[in-house]
Image 1 (cartoon, one colour):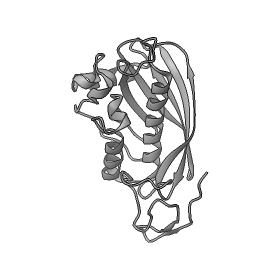
Image 2: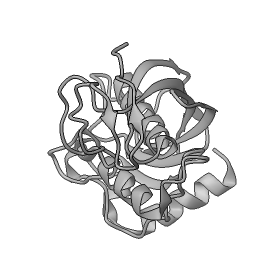
Image 3: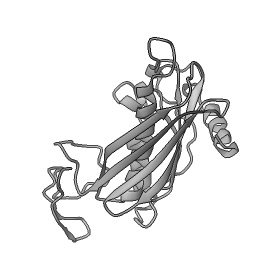
Amino acid sequence: MQEDDRAAVRRGQAGGPGAGPGAGAGSGPAAGPQAAPAAGQGAGPGAEYAMRVRSMFDQPGADTLVGRMGIRILEASAQRVVATMPVAGNTQPYGLLHGGASCVLAETLGSLGSALHAGPGRATVGIEISATHHRAASAGVVTGVATQLHGGATMTTYEIVISDEQGRRVCTSRLSCLLRDGVPGGGTGGNAGSRPGTDGSGSGGAGSDGATRPAARDV
């Protein structure tokens, strides 16, 4: 973990108890000050859209997976997303950070970056994730940093590096997301960029900008 990442973590921990080492999964992220998100490169969604997207991924409480696991977003842009997650409450039977928890953190960060890249009126869905677990973590918080490797019109790819409080790499993950004009699988709500006339069925249609888009196909 680089020095600027450690500084971001320190700022985030100062914002409230939810990001501290003893925070459990049920306590949710703290509501401290957050860095202003940046718009997706080339997509031009604007600050208001970026704020809506970030709020979708940064929800405290037990009603969302992010909230239950105590994930807290510290920085968000299409090119780079940083967040922390407590080890406590996210462990496997040996008391170590669960590998699945690392994958949840990785997909959350990559999906947030992808949504910011996609821009208004589009949805992003993860289609492939891989993870290599390098070392164990048994206490404190881990920090994930997602970096965009590819940002296209229909697909994005992110590398996510998860490190412990000593800056040692715990996990390296890679996520690819498909960009669509609607939420697939009958999903509803939470689509900050949904277009009128697009009900998530992939049927396409005219967007709020008047452009007619082809139907999206499931992968």
